[in-house]
Image 1 (cartoon, rainbow, N blue to C red):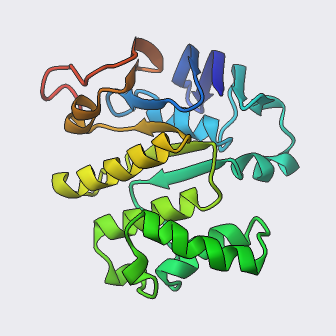
Image 2: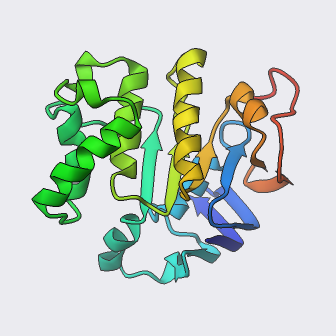
Length: 232
């Protein structure tokens, strides 16, 4: 599903975000990216979403070489990728249902399909009763559920999550992770960057640890086993 071959990414000022990364993620896996702030986790996510392009090496996602994609073909790639973030990125003037519907509208789904899919997706994330609410009428956890619903609206093959529980309390975070676990069990590959030790330890999925852009650990059923305080 995802393969990185000797991938290096350097930003202006000779800041090396990733250095010679080689790894493969299979279809249907749930993978945690861990490491100190600045270790390269967010760059890893942006490269997979084609927001950034590697300076050297090759990234393959679902058989496509991301480095050789023409700009006009990037939107088609992203139809198969769902993204969620720490700050939700919802459209404040649209209701919950309209936020989810918008994700389907921009890829040209017919209105009958949208009318059928939106209620089903809101039911999946537990927000059927709040379809007509606006983002500022929701809790942080509810807003993140809308974000997940929107990201999952097109049934993507890959879900990329960059610190999705970063703004949430522990109890709310558990609910979000149960939802991501459910989506993963439906066949979507999930790659999640996180600093949340308790989540990683409780789920014990594959853990890839980065340190200054280098993969220093790759455990198939790992835990966040660094000493307390090692991570910001």
